[in-house]
Amino acid sequence: MVKVCISGYYGFKNFGDEAILSVLVNHLNEHDITVFSVNPEFTSVEYGVKSVKSFDLKKVIQTIRNADIVVSGGGSLLQDVTSLKSLVYYSLIIALGLFFNKKVIIFAQGIGPINNSFAQIIVKNLLRLCSLVTVRDENSFNLLKNWGVDAKLVCDPIYSLDVACQEKSNTVGIQLRDFKTMNYNLLQKLAMLIVTKFTDKKVEIFSLQETQDLELCKKFEAILHSLNTEIQTEIVTDNIIERISKLEYLLAMRFHAILVALKCGVKTCAINYDIKVEKLAQDANLPIISMGANENFEAIYNKLQNLNKEELLRFANSKTFDWTEFDELFAFGFSE
Image (tube, rainbow, N blue to C red; front, side, top):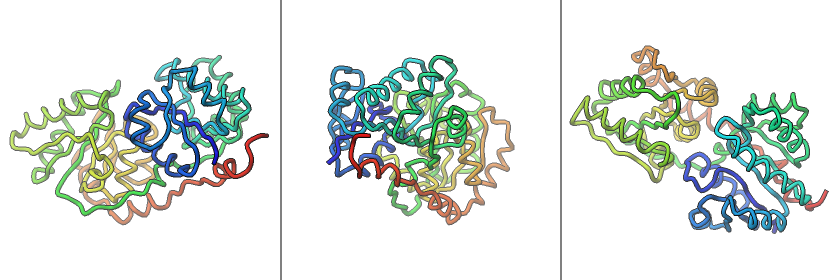
């Protein structure tokens, strides 16, 4: 049994990151797992693993020192757009793993942007020393290639999540997240699309991270009711995968909401707040709405209607996460 500690954006109850952790824990279930989390109690109960407070550095250092392997990721941990502090923290975890001569795995991360030149140097040199670096997108892969870091391009680990396709209900989902480019014009046009094109359907409004999404979801629900007082709505915060799997249609911002919908054959329209969402939508041939909402919404609706469930499932099933090199590090010894 290998002792492994996992570092990431865990315990914040962000749907995408928690889903990635679920995949990791399920894959490593025969090993001794400790997860660094801002909410160790939640993480321990939710996944049946040991958990240490992310910022309890004494326990973090002790855990890394006693581990065989340190896994950093997934998600976008090594970037300074959100904050330089988070980049410093996740870099410190990697550095500690290397200092104690542990195998360090960078797991399916999106690297960058890193605007601070000193931070670039630190991250570049840390990654060169890791046992395995896997990235989830071509931009990260090309960045690391330019840095002289040997990295492997993999698909998102959520593609390996076991999702049961459910019988479709007469429901349309809308998934929103608060973001710097969010605006009333977009919300109004999305609401108009729903009340004019989906008048016979229940509307489920998905909040995938309560601290970021819930107030925006409530605001959008109010806009819907101002346009149609009879519309049936529900804000969804739990059992996200199961609820998405039963949708007939979904309009979504978050990458992992779109990915789960694809795995369930849900007709989906992407709301493009980030390049990773745009790339996924283009690859899967989904309709895309920009944050400026300048598109012809009639054309968007027609493309959404004409999506084929079998083609969506075929696209999702064509993606297979490659665990080969990852598993090899767990199979053969723990010292270089």
